Length: 313
Ligand SMILES: Cc1ncc(COP(=O)(O)O)c(C=O)c1O
Image (tube, rainbow, N blue to C red; front, side):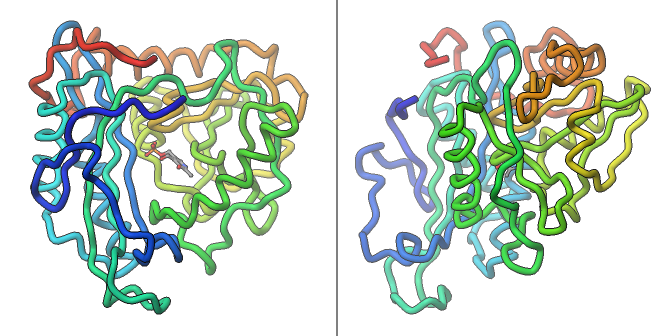
C-alpha cells in the first residue's frame, strides 16, 4: 500500500512540512544502512484516540541507538512528547507512527561516528499488514535470521531488514503471505516482521530472545495477557516441526497485530481456523486497544485527535 502523506514530520525538535523531510544521497545511512527505527500504532476508542505502548517503543528506540553508539539527543519522555505533537499536528487517527534515526551527511567512511545523528518522526494512515483475513499461509524461509554474533536482533536497525526483505520476497514469490526465519542453529526464530507464537496442549509457546528475535512489544503484551488469562506460557527454543504439529499458531507485531497462521509450508495448522487460545488473546488485545475493556496496564497514551479522520485501512 502506498504511503499516504500527512502534513508534518518532526525533525530534530521541529515540525517541518512532509515534502521538506529530505536527505542527501551521500548520507551515511544510504550507503551502510546505519539507521534505527520504531513502528507504533495509534488506535481509536470511540471518538477518542491513543497511542499503544508509546514509552516502551521509545525506550526500545533509545536502546537500539545505544547498541549502535548512536545517541539520539532526546530523553524517552521528550521523544514521547514529540510523537504526541506530530500525531496531534497531523490529526490522523488511527495511524501508524514511524520514528527513525540515522547517520546523516558527514563522512563516507564506514565508521559512523563523525556523521550527524538525525531524528525524524512521521505518521500516516495504515491498515492490515499480513494479508489474509482467514489467517496467513506462511512458509519456513530458506534464509536464516541473523546469527547473534553478526547483527544484534534486539536492536531494531534498518540493516536488519535486508534479511527481512529476503524472507518476505521469497515467501511472496512462492505464493505465501509471509516467511518464518530459522535461527543460525535451525530453531524457529520469527517472521520477517513478526514474533511467533504457537499453542500445543493448552500451553502457549514463544521463541526466546536468544533465538535471534526482536523483543517485540506486542509479544510482551500477549505474554502479559496470557498470564492474566491463566494460560500457561513457555519461552523455549523449538524445532520447526512444532509448527506442523501444534494446535494453533499466530504472529504478533505492531503491523501484524495478532494474525493467526492458517498453514505452514502448506500443512494446515490445526483445522486452519483461529483456535480458542489465539482468539481469547486476540479478542483481549483488541478489547484494550479499541477501548471496549479498561486500559488496566496503562498501555494507552491519549492524543488529542478526533477519531473521525479518514483512514486507509
Ligand atoms: C523482525 C521483527 N520481529 C518482531 C516484530 C514485532 O515487534 P513489535 O511487537 O514491537 O512491533 C517486528 C516489528 O516491529 C519486527 O520487525
